[in-house]
Image (cartoon, rainbow over all chains, first blue to last red; front, top):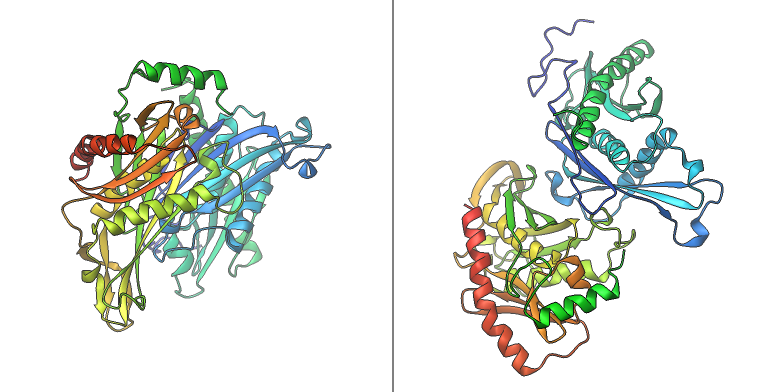
Length: 237
Length: 264
């Protein structure tokens, strides 16, 4: 792969992540909360629960329910987005549930619900990944037993070059050569995929390579998540 | 999650002795922190924390058509979303009445105070004007979201930069900036008084707000009143009202001082 000359619009190398910031405890009311920032994308997440599910007919006596809601603020994008849920936000809410549920022991919470609310304050691509990263930290911050943290990043292809962590411009405006392919994935600590999507056009071999690179990058993100959580309990400064 | 009734009785008794749980005076706000530019794609944005209460507001602008009754004026649209993220009490689902009322109260405070010069937001009379969207999101509810939203809206408007206008397409050009939104120097502040027992307080904590019997929101400028709303069912006497109108000037001054200090 000749990736040397390829220049990204924000000056990054193809396999370089944007600067990351992570912090827990950003919503005092919540049982757990976190902020995750990747470049100009900022997500916050708050967890409430486990708590009794209302209304009663929504309760599942077999296992608890994980309920995620993803809301992108109207002013987080150039052209104001309408307030309230839309098809996109409903799908991402569900994707977020699917990404996180494998690491939770929902069988331990029959008839209960864990609410995870994700709010995108500023959007520049990769908002679902940032949301999942924040949500995973918020669940841990809430003290909910988890098999692993979930870590999310997008990989993809710009023209012929494989890249990581696609930004807003690259996702929606990049149109050179083969155009852009965006592949957000989420993984557990051992690298198993809990979520994957793909938009674009990519060969099977390149896809495998891209996903491998993203799994590697997730280790870096995982460390940032872990550090932020440690800080919150005064573990490491 | 509900505040126990016994706390309410204690709050009421304390207030009758002129005291509050956190030691504040009746007409004293908690610490106000204003942070600007918290969301880059917005034309202006602000995060306001009052104690543990937190609200964010973003201003967006686009080009639209004027309303039939204001052909030479820009438009203001104020909306609020009380996020379930901000409190265990806020239910999922469509916006409740509190969100709707908040948007309307803040809208009237901004509009009626003539803070925004809408004539200057006219691009071509009868055809093209600027729409100004004030969008409010609650992040943490520890009482008095309403006043926090009002302060955040004013701070975000004051710091906002208008997008450019593209003559060819007749649309906003978000890559360009065209100066500040035309605002008057005199800015409004929305202040809500809550009646608990025989006393009125400002800036209630969550606990105090739970025992508010009635509230009066006053959108005021230096020395003038631009908007009001009495909410909830308990009556207030004319004497009560007169007292609030006396008080509001002082509270306005305190809060305005913070806004002036923190919004440059």
